[in-house]
Length: 500
Image 1 (cartoon, rainbow, N blue to C red):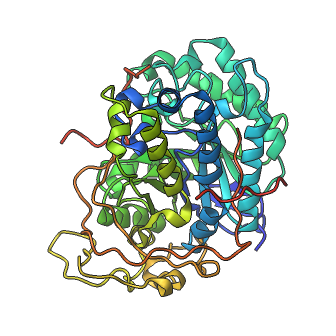
Image 2: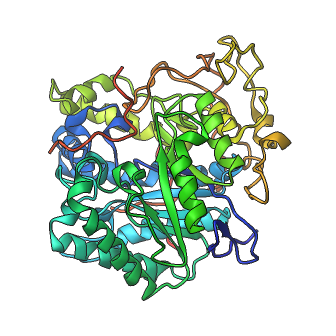
């Protein structure tokens, strides 16, 4: 199936034939913009710059450069892209850090654009839409670790940062105009949380309008996706459509999976006749996933599950196994004792081994929950306590889930109306989905526990056959601003793919 350019038709997103498309996808966070919580680090090593400084301090500058080269080559590969499609998703949201694409002097970094291009080409081969998400803009749009800023949203205080951001989006649009794989341009992730929105709201409005003008000078077709202030959820500035091809985005964490929690966005959709999209959500338990994403399907709202893969988790489709002695790296990250060079190198090398798709623990129950699919062999039916939501899992089960890869969504799980989403397809070659869990959650975003309990470890994933699905290659101060909404409330390296 060849993808076609998406466009707005009233409150729906449609393809070139006018068929409504509901984007159902996952986010590829931590790949080009590392976030400390996905490494089990604290606030002193939370941003990309802080994590980069930590790795350099532990193993030296030359070894750190090699570490990041291998990290980018391995964290997301074409194996991941193929598995995302096989699970039934039709899109990804790709968070970008401006520093991989341009220098502080405004020069383009072609290795960074090559990484982006190869990602898009891999998605083209698998008919997967890509939303380009500027997660970290020059100077920072949030003033927190998630935008790689110095602790203040200096995108709005320094005209130079504003100019760089406009240039960057125009260049991205120029390089990707007419490309149907690109679903849209997500201009700024979660701008102006907390009190920042009172100071800079007018600046954000002007920047959005200028970004749209710059993009339309080179690309008249692609969707432009606008997020509200305060973690994307304050839509008080979104009172009119500044472009005909626009989508409004909200995020959803730590509130009830019901229509009351999104009523404001539904009212805006109806009043302005505009598509709305849940661009980030997750970091909760299976019943919450089932309720939230199922609700969106029923309402014809596209959605994106925040994180495809992270370290030591049970609430993402993939979990990176925690390396031996990882607590020594955590200690250094949090300002405590640090391991010697040899020990640090050994631990970080194991981490790089563990991030590859085939080395990760697989959690198909997470996908089944958000897709509202019937339980399969890897999700044995168990009794459901009254009011407890999604059924649990027995700790004595060691299933073979190969057949679950081909399981179709049940009719009751299908989106209503004409909402289209990719049906599940078999995993490539001899890949199987074998669910495994880790004994820790290890996330600043996770509160409480999923209803699914731990269960036995099944056999290790087999390696891919020779020549199958080569990976995509890569490219070579604590925040005092508000906490991210993802934070819970208190309580062997594959060979690189040849260049296109």
